[in-house]
Length: 266
Image (cartoon, rainbow, N blue to C red):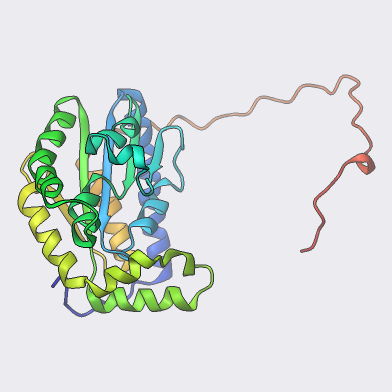
Protein backbone atom coordinates (compact mmCIF):
# COMPACT_ATOMS: atom_id res chain seq x y z
CA UNK A 1 0.00 0.00 0.00
CA UNK A 2 1.10 3.55 -0.65
CA UNK A 3 1.68 6.27 1.87
CA UNK A 4 -0.26 4.81 4.79
CA UNK A 5 1.11 7.18 7.43
CA UNK A 6 -1.19 9.52 9.29
CA UNK A 7 -2.21 12.65 7.44
CA UNK A 8 0.11 15.51 8.51
CA UNK A 9 -1.29 18.64 10.07
CA UNK A 10 -2.69 21.24 7.73
CA UNK A 11 -0.66 24.33 6.94
CA UNK A 12 -2.23 27.73 7.45
CA UNK A 13 -3.92 29.64 4.63
CA UNK A 14 -1.55 32.57 5.14
CA UNK A 15 1.61 30.48 4.93
CA UNK A 16 0.31 28.56 1.91
CA UNK A 17 -0.65 31.68 -0.03
CA UNK A 18 2.64 33.44 0.74
CA UNK A 19 4.74 30.45 -0.30
CA UNK A 20 2.64 29.80 -3.41
CA UNK A 21 3.03 33.43 -4.46
CA UNK A 22 6.81 33.20 -4.07
CA UNK A 23 6.95 30.02 -6.11
CA UNK A 24 4.71 31.42 -8.84
CA UNK A 25 7.02 34.41 -9.19
CA UNK A 26 9.88 31.97 -9.68
CA UNK A 27 7.84 30.04 -12.24
CA UNK A 28 7.50 33.23 -14.29
CA UNK A 29 11.29 33.62 -14.15
CA UNK A 30 11.67 30.00 -15.27
CA UNK A 31 9.22 30.63 -18.10
CA UNK A 32 11.26 33.55 -19.41
CA UNK A 33 14.44 31.49 -19.20
CA UNK A 34 12.82 28.65 -21.17
CA UNK A 35 11.75 31.15 -23.81
CA UNK A 36 15.14 32.87 -24.04
CA UNK A 37 17.21 29.68 -24.16
CA UNK A 38 14.81 27.77 -26.40
CA UNK A 39 14.44 24.94 -23.91
CA UNK A 40 11.98 22.10 -24.52
CA UNK A 41 10.43 20.90 -21.27
CA UNK A 42 7.99 18.04 -20.67
CA UNK A 43 6.51 17.49 -17.22
CA UNK A 44 4.42 14.36 -16.65
CA UNK A 45 1.86 14.17 -13.86
CA UNK A 46 0.67 10.70 -12.97
CA UNK A 47 -0.91 9.12 -9.92
CA UNK A 48 -4.16 7.87 -8.53
CA UNK A 49 -7.53 9.47 -9.10
CA UNK A 50 -8.10 12.34 -6.63
CA UNK A 51 -4.39 12.52 -5.84
CA UNK A 52 -4.26 16.25 -6.62
CA UNK A 53 -2.50 16.31 -9.98
CA UNK A 54 -4.98 18.72 -11.54
CA UNK A 55 -4.83 21.16 -8.64
CA UNK A 56 -1.04 21.29 -8.82
CA UNK A 57 -1.11 21.86 -12.58
CA UNK A 58 -3.60 24.72 -12.13
CA UNK A 59 -1.28 26.46 -9.66
CA UNK A 60 1.69 26.06 -12.00
CA UNK A 61 -0.02 27.57 -15.03
CA UNK A 62 -1.97 30.22 -13.09
CA UNK A 63 0.52 33.03 -13.74
CA UNK A 64 2.20 31.70 -16.89
CA UNK A 65 1.81 32.56 -20.55
CA UNK A 66 -0.33 29.84 -22.22
CA UNK A 67 1.68 30.32 -25.41
CA UNK A 68 4.77 29.12 -23.58
CA UNK A 69 3.34 26.74 -20.99
CA UNK A 70 0.40 24.56 -22.00
CA UNK A 71 -1.44 21.56 -20.60
CA UNK A 72 -2.13 18.37 -22.53
CA UNK A 73 -4.92 16.15 -21.18
CA UNK A 74 -5.90 13.67 -23.87
CA UNK A 75 -9.21 11.84 -23.77
CA UNK A 76 -10.08 8.32 -24.82
CA UNK A 77 -8.25 7.37 -28.03
CA UNK A 78 -10.31 7.26 -31.21
CA UNK A 79 -10.73 4.08 -33.23
CA UNK A 80 -8.08 5.36 -35.63
CA UNK A 81 -5.65 6.22 -32.82
CA UNK A 82 -6.05 2.72 -31.41
CA UNK A 83 -4.47 1.36 -34.60
CA UNK A 84 -1.46 3.73 -34.46
CA UNK A 85 1.93 3.19 -32.89
CA UNK A 86 1.09 3.66 -29.23
CA UNK A 87 3.24 6.76 -28.64
CA UNK A 88 2.07 8.41 -31.88
CA UNK A 89 -0.87 10.34 -30.40
CA UNK A 90 1.42 11.96 -27.84
CA UNK A 91 4.23 13.02 -30.19
CA UNK A 92 2.34 15.96 -31.82
CA UNK A 93 1.95 17.53 -28.38
CA UNK A 94 5.66 17.56 -27.55
CA UNK A 95 7.19 21.04 -27.13
CA UNK A 96 9.07 23.09 -29.68
CA UNK A 97 11.93 25.33 -28.57
CA UNK A 98 10.88 27.77 -25.88
CA UNK A 99 7.91 25.73 -24.67
CA UNK A 100 6.94 23.75 -21.57
CA UNK A 101 4.23 21.10 -21.82
CA UNK A 102 2.48 19.64 -18.78
CA UNK A 103 0.93 16.23 -19.40
CA UNK A 104 -2.07 15.63 -17.16
CA UNK A 105 -1.71 11.87 -17.55
CA UNK A 106 0.41 10.63 -20.40
CA UNK A 107 1.63 7.58 -22.26
CA UNK A 108 1.76 5.88 -18.86
CA UNK A 109 -1.99 5.23 -19.20
CA UNK A 110 -0.98 1.92 -20.75
CA UNK A 111 0.85 0.81 -17.61
CA UNK A 112 -1.97 1.96 -15.33
CA UNK A 113 -5.61 2.19 -16.30
CA UNK A 114 -5.27 0.21 -19.54
CA UNK A 115 -3.46 -2.61 -17.76
CA UNK A 116 -5.78 -2.78 -14.75
CA UNK A 117 -9.04 -2.31 -16.67
CA UNK A 118 -8.07 -4.70 -19.46
CA UNK A 119 -8.13 -2.05 -22.20
CA UNK A 120 -4.97 -3.41 -23.81
CA UNK A 121 -3.67 -6.89 -24.50
CA UNK A 122 -0.98 -8.49 -22.40
CA UNK A 123 1.35 -8.26 -25.41
CA UNK A 124 0.65 -4.53 -25.78
CA UNK A 125 1.36 -4.00 -22.09
CA UNK A 126 4.73 -5.75 -22.08
CA UNK A 127 5.72 -4.09 -25.35
CA UNK A 128 5.03 -0.74 -23.67
CA UNK A 129 7.24 -1.56 -20.68
CA UNK A 130 10.05 -2.59 -23.04
CA UNK A 131 9.63 0.38 -25.38
CA UNK A 132 8.97 3.21 -22.93
CA UNK A 133 12.55 3.62 -21.61
CA UNK A 134 13.82 3.71 -25.20
CA UNK A 135 11.17 6.23 -26.21
CA UNK A 136 12.07 8.51 -23.31
CA UNK A 137 15.76 8.08 -24.07
CA UNK A 138 15.09 9.34 -27.61
CA UNK A 139 13.21 12.36 -26.24
CA UNK A 140 16.03 13.25 -23.89
CA UNK A 141 18.69 12.78 -26.56
CA UNK A 142 16.70 15.13 -28.82
CA UNK A 143 17.10 17.88 -26.20
CA UNK A 144 13.85 17.54 -24.28
CA UNK A 145 14.02 17.98 -20.52
CA UNK A 146 11.74 15.23 -19.18
CA UNK A 147 10.44 15.35 -15.60
CA UNK A 148 8.05 12.72 -14.22
CA UNK A 149 5.95 13.08 -11.05
CA UNK A 150 3.90 10.39 -9.35
CA UNK A 151 1.33 11.71 -6.85
CA UNK A 152 0.97 9.16 -4.08
CA UNK A 153 -2.19 9.16 -1.96
CA UNK A 154 -3.38 6.68 0.66
CA UNK A 155 -6.62 4.75 0.25
CA UNK A 156 -8.05 6.56 3.29
CA UNK A 157 -7.45 10.03 1.87
CA UNK A 158 -8.56 9.01 -1.61
CA UNK A 159 -11.85 7.80 -0.12
CA UNK A 160 -12.30 11.12 1.71
CA UNK A 161 -11.79 13.05 -1.51
CA UNK A 162 -14.21 10.85 -3.43
CA UNK A 163 -16.84 11.49 -0.76
CA UNK A 164 -16.15 15.24 -0.91
CA UNK A 165 -16.67 15.21 -4.67
CA UNK A 166 -19.96 13.39 -4.31
CA UNK A 167 -21.20 16.02 -1.86
CA UNK A 168 -20.03 19.04 -3.88
CA UNK A 169 -22.04 19.78 -7.08
CA UNK A 170 -19.10 21.77 -8.50
CA UNK A 171 -16.78 18.75 -8.20
CA UNK A 172 -19.13 15.89 -8.97
CA UNK A 173 -18.13 15.97 -12.65
CA UNK A 174 -14.67 14.80 -11.58
CA UNK A 175 -16.09 11.40 -10.63
CA UNK A 176 -16.34 9.21 -13.71
CA UNK A 177 -17.34 5.54 -13.79
CA UNK A 178 -13.63 4.84 -14.28
CA UNK A 179 -12.80 6.65 -11.05
CA UNK A 180 -15.35 4.60 -9.13
CA UNK A 181 -13.95 1.41 -10.61
CA UNK A 182 -10.42 2.45 -9.62
CA UNK A 183 -11.67 2.77 -6.05
CA UNK A 184 -12.57 -0.91 -6.08
CA UNK A 185 -9.24 -1.89 -7.63
CA UNK A 186 -6.92 0.07 -5.32
CA UNK A 187 -4.63 -2.92 -4.74
CA UNK A 188 -4.44 -3.77 -8.45
CA UNK A 189 -3.40 -0.19 -9.24
CA UNK A 190 -0.70 -0.46 -6.56
CA UNK A 191 0.69 -3.59 -8.16
CA UNK A 192 0.60 -1.99 -11.62
CA UNK A 193 2.42 1.09 -10.33
CA UNK A 194 5.13 -1.05 -8.72
CA UNK A 195 5.70 -2.98 -11.94
CA UNK A 196 5.72 0.23 -13.99
CA UNK A 197 8.36 1.72 -11.72
CA UNK A 198 10.50 -1.40 -11.98
CA UNK A 199 10.81 -0.83 -15.75
CA UNK A 200 10.59 2.95 -16.17
CA UNK A 201 12.22 4.46 -13.06
CA UNK A 202 15.63 4.80 -14.68
CA UNK A 203 18.69 6.88 -13.87
CA UNK A 204 18.23 8.81 -17.11
CA UNK A 205 14.50 9.37 -16.55
CA UNK A 206 13.60 8.88 -12.88
CA UNK A 207 10.20 9.11 -11.23
CA UNK A 208 9.81 11.71 -8.49
CA UNK A 209 7.30 10.73 -5.81
CA UNK A 210 5.04 13.43 -4.36
CA UNK A 211 3.38 12.69 -1.02
CA UNK A 212 -0.09 13.97 -1.87
CA UNK A 213 -2.12 13.20 1.25
CA UNK A 214 -1.95 16.92 2.03
CA UNK A 215 -2.84 18.82 -1.14
CA UNK A 216 -1.25 22.11 -0.20
CA UNK A 217 2.05 20.55 0.84
CA UNK A 218 2.03 18.47 -2.33
CA UNK A 219 1.56 21.55 -4.51
CA UNK A 220 4.30 23.54 -2.81
CA UNK A 221 6.74 20.63 -2.73
CA UNK A 222 6.16 19.72 -6.37
CA UNK A 223 6.53 23.28 -7.66
CA UNK A 224 9.63 23.84 -5.52
CA UNK A 225 11.17 20.65 -6.90
CA UNK A 226 10.32 21.57 -10.50
CA UNK A 227 12.12 24.87 -10.04
CA UNK A 228 15.14 23.08 -8.58
CA UNK A 229 15.70 20.63 -11.46
CA UNK A 230 15.88 23.23 -14.25
CA UNK A 231 18.67 25.76 -13.68
CA UNK A 232 17.52 29.26 -14.63
CA UNK A 233 18.45 32.90 -14.14
CA UNK A 234 16.34 35.90 -13.20
CA UNK A 235 15.46 37.83 -16.36
CA UNK A 236 12.95 40.14 -14.71
CA UNK A 237 13.05 43.45 -16.62
CA UNK A 238 13.47 46.80 -14.92
CA UNK A 239 10.25 48.58 -13.87
CA UNK A 240 8.45 49.98 -16.89
CA UNK A 241 7.54 53.66 -17.10
CA UNK A 242 4.35 54.13 -19.10
CA UNK A 243 4.50 56.88 -21.75
CA UNK A 244 1.81 59.60 -21.68
CA UNK A 245 -1.31 58.88 -23.70
CA UNK A 246 -1.89 60.69 -26.96
CA UNK A 247 -4.30 63.61 -27.09
CA UNK A 248 -7.82 62.64 -28.18
CA UNK A 249 -7.51 65.05 -31.14
CA UNK A 250 -11.20 65.60 -31.61
CA UNK A 251 -12.29 61.98 -31.10
CA UNK A 252 -15.94 61.83 -30.04
CA UNK A 253 -17.08 58.66 -28.32
CA UNK A 254 -20.47 57.20 -29.41
CA UNK A 255 -23.30 57.78 -26.90
CA UNK A 256 -23.06 55.26 -24.08
CA UNK A 257 -26.82 54.75 -24.28
CA UNK A 258 -26.34 53.00 -27.63
CA UNK A 259 -24.13 50.29 -26.10
CA UNK A 260 -25.43 46.92 -24.96
CA UNK A 261 -24.12 46.15 -21.48
CA UNK A 262 -24.25 42.97 -19.44
CA UNK A 263 -27.01 43.38 -16.83
CA UNK A 264 -25.65 44.44 -13.43
CA UNK A 265 -27.17 41.69 -11.29
CA UNK A 266 -24.53 42.03 -8.58
